[in-house]
Image (cartoon, rainbow, N blue to C red; front, side):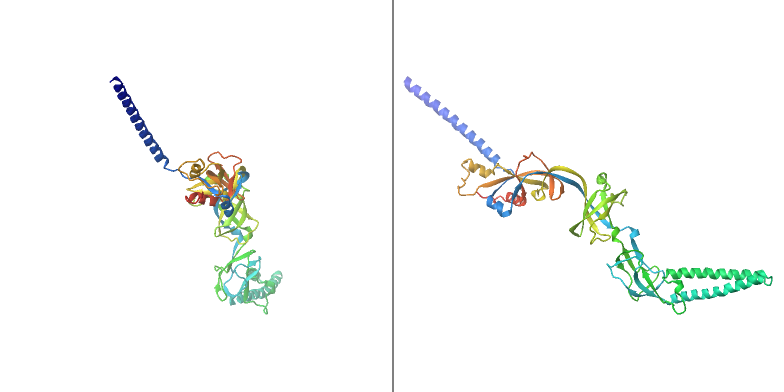
Length: 417
């Protein structure tokens, strides 16, 4: 009886122990389930894996982060201008009918070159008046000498002498005025005679430059307020940059400006700052910075809009080629070769029961980690970078083909095992 009671006690103790073990197993199972659910929320993928064949196919090239002497820059907009003293409106001092036009838009003309010819019968009348006054002066001079001689011999009245003197002076004044008018018309007064009266005049260019517009045509009437053409000396072309107040302290006379035409960005031109404005332009809250265009000026015309880059001081900074940087979600990244693995590959290579073991025949993969950087200035094909997290000095960086690595990373099913 005593032994029977002892056996029953052992059975009860065993059953209680098993119950505790099962309860503990259930609790552990719940914790593992919760942990599994927690790990189920995957973080954004930052490791891209490519085979050697894939890297060759898209031309991926590795390099190092280099220390480059880059010039920091400021981007601005501006307009090409020609000073007003290098522009000219070609007009005639007298009205007339256009008989000939000797130039076309785009032609280069020199100062004094004939632009057009005009005619008007009034030109003959002016020359006629000049010849008439010359004849009257000859007669007036004879009359004055005669009156003076009579007066000197007390044979004539002083009043007659004074009258002849006044007449001679008036005629000489008229002659001088007519001479000036003829000269302004381009007629040499010394060549005017009864057999050489001109009915036409020529219009010449007041400066050397390029014909930008032609306002008249053959047969049209022009007067002193009617422009015939416009001439611009593009040799004095300069650049007006519009710089914001915050960038003004960085501007200095002598700085180099690289600029391109807004509507034709294929060709780059150069300029140099020679003057900095001291007042705001209208309501734009910008200050004009004046630059002289240097070197090639082919294709540049007054009034063209440009986009310019002002070069500031040079500084030595870590940099990578421009195409090594990719943009995503308004941030910038580079790709660095790493020993880190994609999560799926890590399970495979660690023998995790949920992973699929990679076949020995499958190619080796190279891993690249997406690393955030801050962009700096760009110059000569390189861009300065500042790493958000520390990057090893000997790290291998994707310097060519980063776009394809990023595309591989963005494709969840794109990696192969």
